[in-house]
Length: 91
Image (tube, rainbow, N blue to C red; front, side, top):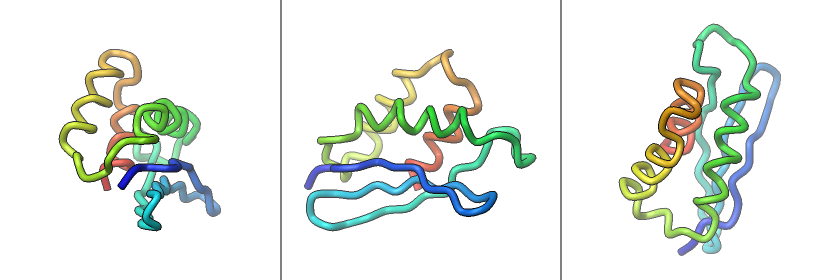
């Protein structure tokens, strides 16, 4: 099984991350601005796009390995907004 697409979706004020595999399995996670106050979702969305470059083609069952790779890949670059993106992907 491999990740084929990682996309962000918006509905009114709500934002989501959708991850699909080549076997038809889909996962959806909530994406919130790191401030938690309903701020702009643009930076967390950019974080999801940044992580999707790594995730596409990977086996989604290796959760801890992927999380560690994405976290260490962005260390000191995105701060709390990047952690928001990782949280949405992790769900």
